[in-house]
Each structure stands twice: as C-alpha cells, then as structure tokens.
Image (cartoon, rainbow, N blue to C red):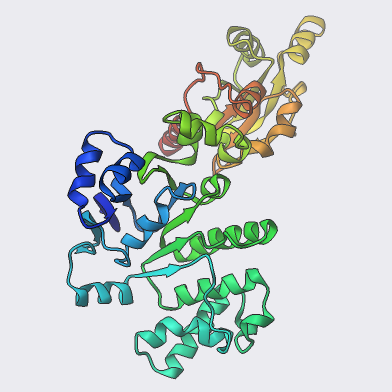
Length: 416
C-alpha cells in the first residue's frame, strides 16, 4: 500500500548558513558543537518515515528532541531546510503557496496541546471555525460542527461557552474542530499534555474509540512513553533531532536499539505492551475420540515436559487433561477414556488479550488456550511464558507463534 504520508531525509536547520550545520552533521558533531561553532541550530536531522492511511504514527521524545519542530514541517508551518514531505503526490516542502493552502484546507489539520478556543464563541462556533476559514456557509458549518461534536460526545453542549466546560471537555472541542473539516490527516501535538492524568487516560481511550470508526491517518506527538505505547501502531523515538528507533510497541520494548531507548522502556508495564499472541506456542493436542488417546496424551506430556494437555474435538476445544489425573486413572483404574478425567472449564483467551489480563489464569498453573474467532484452538500459553515475558526474561526457545498455528488451523478447516 502506498503511504499516505512519506517523509524523506528531512532536515530543519535554524540560521542563515544551514550548509555549515550540515557539514558539521556529516562529521558527526553534536547539536551543541554545531551551534557553538556556526551559530546554527539543528532542529531536525535526516528524518525519514512512512505513514499508511488509517495508521497512528507516534513520535515520542523529551523536550528539545525536535518532535514539535518535525510535526510543524509536515503541514508547512515550518518549511524544512532539506528533504521531501509527500502527502499523496504533493510535496509540502516544495509546492507553491497556493497548493500548500489547498493541502491544508482539504487534507490536513492540527490539534494543539493548548485548546486555543475562542472564549466569546460557543462550542459549536469553535468547532466550526476551520469550516469558516474554508468559506463554508453558516448552515453547513453548523451541521458539520454538530456532527463532529456528536462524535466526541459533546453535541448537548453545542451552545455552551468554553468556560462552562472542564479541561477534558475543552480538549474534545479542539478535537471536534479538527474533525469537522473531515481531514485525511490529523497532526496532534501533545494534545493531552495539559490534562490531569485521569482525564488524559479518558481522552486516550476516546481517541482509540474514534479511530476504530474514522480510520484517520494520525501523527501524534508526545513526551510520554506510556501514551506512545498505548496509541501507536508505529512509534518513533526521537533524540537530538533524529530518530533513534522506529517500530511497534512490542519491537521497541523487546529490542531497544541502544541504551537511550533501553532507559526509557526499563520501567514499562510489559503486561500492557505484549499480548497473548506474543507468548503463545503451537498447540500439542490429542483428539477426544481417537483410539489410544489417553496413552498418547501421557506420552506427549512426557515428551514435551508438560503437566497438562489440551483435548480437541473436530478442531474445537473440548477441555484439558492433567498428567497427574490421567496417570492415576490409568494406573489404578485402567481407564483409557479421556472424557472421564477431562476438565471442561478451561481458561480461554483471544490472541489480542493483554498479558496483564492473563496473570490470574497463569497463576493456576495450567496452560491457557488461545482461541480463534471460530472457537478453534490456535495456540497454547504455558504459565511460565507469561511470567517470563512480564519479567523481561522471555524464553528464546518458544515454539511456533500463534499466527502460524492459527494459519495452520484455518487451512485445516478449509480442507474439511
């Protein structure tokens, strides 16, 4: 898929002699060294990335890392010194002023940290402000503003004034103002940074909820790594004007590119970052009605050093048997029918279930079943795999992933 936004080798150097700064960068000099020697300030250096349509791309960095400068180059508020910024076929870095205005009107909008609401205008009038700038009539502005306010749950406050709303509600108005123009790309520069922690979390959840419906292309700027990990389909860690690492939340937490990134992710709640699919193994099973199933189950558990095994019936989860129960039954009663010792109430999760929701089930000591959307067994999670991942000591000998198991299960289902 062709990216909606493509950034190629973008630099932003503040000063009259950017070529001097560029020469310093080629010599691996630091921003401070370059400023001391040339008086030029490096804001962004050699940044490249793609954002697909409907993706949330988060740029995370501390104050002074260059993230806000970068996001302002994307809509031409700050022209880059070098490089290309392609929105579809338009290069924001080099297009005419007229074309840039058209791109801003039709394709891209910005939501700021500080709400910048007009205190003398109603909520609806604030939400409609971008439409007014575009020259739309009053009736159309009102209709679209109300629709945007409905999306953020504030339609009832359309005729209220900003000072009658809480901080979180005011930020929702700012978001509605961005949505009212129906942009293809949303630039969000620390939009929740001024909110209290509880309200901030509510707004994060609200954004994810909206994104499921609207599927906008979003570039989200933050200094909060937890926020980045929660929201980002892809995350870029920025330092000194450049990208240190780009990847998914799991990739960055699991394999930090350097000590700088490792220091950031060291205290992250891994249970919120990783999901069931990340630690699931290919299931080892027996069929409920097959001949010699009990003996086969015991052999498999001994071979793979497992204390329990899942039993399936035509690809569906029938339950699990434990080595202890099955061995006792076979020794004392000579049973060979798995149904006699089958535990049918078993922990079952989806592949997207966060690890922090598996701790209770894992504490019981038995493997957790990962079921696909059709109720078939797609993977199994051993309790130790959960604890190892939560502690950051994931076992490298993990078997095939749940993705492979699910694909195999689906292929088998298609043949039946």
